Image (cartoon, rainbow, N blue to C red; front, side, top):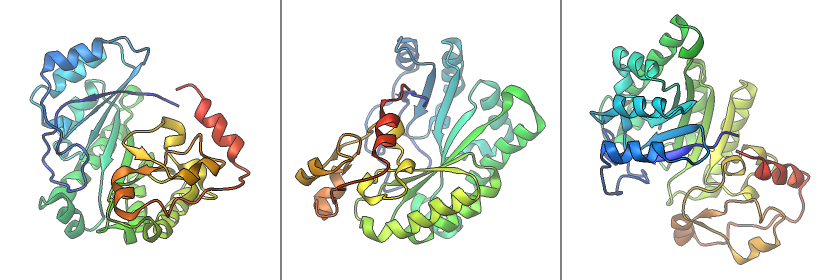
Length: 288
């Protein structure tokens, strides 16, 4: 699996999502600091720019140029794609060497999506950004192919409709879907049935789908869709003492501290046996 050098480019964003992990992060790195990070030799050929919203920086294209000059083969941005609703911005982004996009979407209905982002019209601009990326891909061949990963943050506002969200966006030629469990006040047991439905919908439509922030014990039968198996842990997680009795203990991400502080450890149930444990071990030990 591909391992990215992750670079934070500032917390400024044109959405105001309440579940964003970065919104309270302070600091706005100078261009020189970002270029210095890009120049660090970490043995990686892929870089991910995240915030905040990377496209809001006035020096955004300078950052892309610097990443390309450093020889990164893959440049990815985590974005809401609203700025890419401008076709010229979308073209320039791809021409600058950024071909990988992780785009956050909360719902297929504008009323719910815009309620989460707290910005009227935000879903429409995100859709236009996705359409523009696909238009560019269809008009230009070879190196202009855009890889679009759709990130759906699961929350109290949308968890019941996760399957329909996936089904709505799959026709936009989405390459991958990530279901991220971000709302620490949403009980996991309530969200799991629609999450499983969304996974099965994506499988039937031949779109690769992953979860993030959900422990392996909750994903029985769908363990291969837990993203942390491939990419490792990302965040402040912890486990219950009983997890040491679980066959997945060495490979499981556990749960976020914020969630467990609210709901407790009782939902973490040790798995005694699994036919997938050898597969999980191999996946975790694969080089990036």
